[in-house]
Image (cartoon, rainbow, N blue to C red; front, side):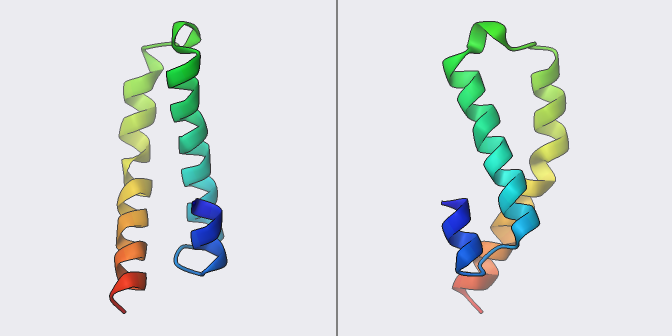
Length: 65
């Protein structure tokens, strides 16, 4: 999804890369939960919320120019 949005220029390359990485992190949480350091999860989530907010802002601007 993020690649498609990047190709349509709804979001930039940097945002797309960050969100693809976040999706990969989500997959690690879902599929290998027992191997995740639970102390790092809140820190990663807290520091990456700005990327989600930026994604929201960019897609809203794309939908409602």
